Each structure stands twice: as structure tokens, then as C-alpha cells.
Image 1 (spheres, one colour):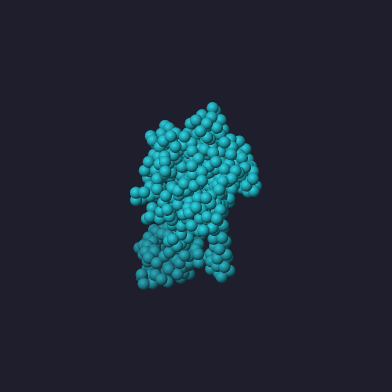
Image 2: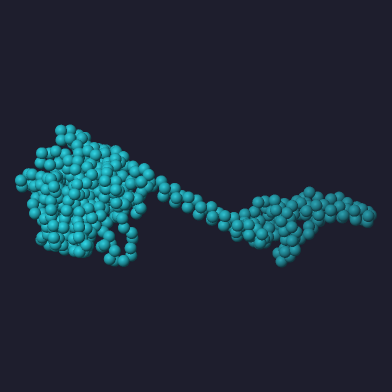
Length: 505
């Protein structure tokens, strides 16, 4: 019986292998699971074979002795095992195999595609709505975090973030020409005194025809300059020919291209400061030929000549002088500017010839025009420095000071800004100059950059180079364009680009 059973099992295995091959071609479960199913099928076949043998034995015993010789177990030769079904009948057997395979495969983790998983998870409208809600919530959180990040970056870059002119953007082609400014550089000295003038732009020096702008009547240094009523007013200073401080004044307009002499100062004055406010030009402090420091303020103003709407000086007798409120203390080597909100600010300077102490003091002419008010001290005392007035971020009036000489008569790189807040004006430090400058360099806004030009360098020699402030990088860099002459102890003034429009073309 055992040999018969073994033969039967071998035949069944052969048949099952055929079934296995047919089944595997269409199955979706692993081969290992199919083999488990095959083992289960073999067990069923073995049980069926045992029952068949038992039935045969029972029939043999009931028929009598004629079957006595068959009462022993069947031999392998006499027993014919059922033949496996042909391949064409496999699908009927596969139904039972499939049921067992499904039972086995249900216990084995199956890998599903992304599409199948999504179909299982979001199979109902309620689940799809839930998915949509969570997606919208996720987008809202993302954009909220992005907005917070932008605000953090904006507020941590510091206020203010750029130095700009007091102009607004305009899409017209004419507006930049009306809003931009040029430097008009006047006098000073290199190895000898200069009577020359030149124009410098954000693109570099402007080469104009000979005679433009007109040269000074004489070489000057230590003079005072201001722009008022579309004219450049120049007074005082030391003549490089006779080496004396004078009291003469001149006016220059673009229409005449001449320096026209106008009524002079009441006393000789040099190394002071000038600032224009409304129809008045204020000349403050300075020294005379005896090198005495003056606290006087001389005010120069116009009468009816400006009501004629003429840019030419038609009648010099229309000018007049008066004495304004004295400064709190004598000073020279200081600077003065008129802020964009109409305040005259005086900063720094020396008070004693022997010590020549660089001052940190700052003063403001009160709006009444009758007295001076002390302002916060600068962080670095300085004299013969540059200063200018502009707006920061288009809304806050500020005064910037750069360079100068410190307590030890050494040129400095320091740059500071006075924020003119009515409640609490204060000085803040800005990045240092790339190279120290002293002895009256010129400072102002050209285009969208703060530019410092001329003055004496660290070795004590006049310079012809310029530096500009990079707001984004927060540093000063050298400009390639140089001035036509090296200048120290000269003066510069910002003029409208309409005076020489070809300089930017």
C-alpha cells in the first residue's frame, strides 16, 4: 500500500506540477504561496486515496472467499491510480486551488500601486471631501509660514535699508533728468591752488566744451558755497595768490555761465559753512586773517530781484546783508546743511587753533530763525568733514557726515547719520569709508548712490577718486571715474542735472 501510495503521490505531484504551471501563468500571488497551496492539494489527494482503499477492502470482504486473495493490500502492479485530468480541464481544478490560494494569500501582505491605495483610501465622497479640506489647510499653512518668513527677513535687515534721493519713481523719460543731480566741484588745491570748476556725474566726470562751467575769478580754498534760487553763491575763502582770507562773493547761473560779483561779506571769512533756506543763505562761523574763530552768522538774502523770475543778476544793489543769531560757540572746519524738512544743521568743527579739538557737537537753527538748539553729540568728533542732507527710504529726513579729521589730526573713515526725528533725534553709525578722507571732500546722492569725492587721503595728499555706498552690500566701493584734477580744501555743491543734461547722455 505504501508503494502504491508513493506511486500515486508521485503521479499526483507530476500532475500538480502541470497544474502549478498553468496556474502560475495567471496567478497574482507569489510562487511560494502557490507551493503552499500545492502541498494542501497533495494532502487532500492522499486522504482521498486512503478512503478509496478502505472502500475496496470493504467490498472485497463482503463478496466472500473468491476475493480472499485480494484482501491483502494492493500492490503497485495491480492498482491503477486515477489519471490526472488533461490540461484542458485544469480550470475546474483551479477553482478549488484558487479558493485555497485566496485563503493563503489573504494572510500574506500584498503590495499595491499608488493608484490602488488612493482608490481604497478616498473611495467615498466623504473621504474625498476630507482630503480636499486637508489639502487646502496645508496650502494655507504653507503660505502663512512663507509670509512670516518674508516679514522676518524684511524687519531683520534693519531700518532704513537704502539711501535714496528725495524723489519718487516715474515712468516718463523726462523725469529722471529733472530729478537727478550733479556735483559741481569748485576751487581747492593740489600742488597749486585751483580756479577751475568741473562737473561730476553718477557715470563719472563730464567733459564739457572749454569754458563750461566758467572758471573762478581767482584761485580759492576754504571758501563757502550754497545753491539758492537756482544759483550757486560763493563767498569768502583764502586766495591762493595773496594767501589772505577775503570777503568777496560771487554768483553763478547756468544761463549766464559767468561768475558775477555781488555784495560781499561784512568781514573777511574763511573755513566756515553755508546753507540756504528759502530766500536766505546763512554763512556760519569760520575764521578771519588773524585766525580768530567767529561765532557770527551773516545772512544774505534777496529782495525783489527774484520776483522778476530772472536767472540773471540784473541789479546787484537788490542784495542785502543782515546779522543772524550767533552760534553758541566759535567754530571753524565744521559743515552745515539744510535738511529736507527745512532745518539748518551744523555739525563738528574746531574751536581752538592750539588744540584744534574735533568736536562732537551738533546744533540746529530753530524754526523761528532766532536761536540755536543743541542736538545729540556725534559718535566721533571730526572737522573738515563732508556732510549732506537727504531722505532715507523716501520718508525720514536725515543728515549724513563722512570722513574728516579726529582729535589727533588724523583722517578718519567714520560715517554717521543723524535721524531727524522730532521726538528723539539720534546719531547712528554706518559702514566706514573704504579709504579715509579729510579736508572737505564732497558728499551727496548721485542717482541712487551716496557718493564721496576728493579731499585728502590717508597719506595727506589730495585725491581725485570717488567712493560710493552700496546699500545692499552695506559697504563703500571705489568708483572707476576720477575727477579731472586732484582737489583738497575745495567745495562741491549739488546742482540740477538740467543745467548740463548732456552729461548723462
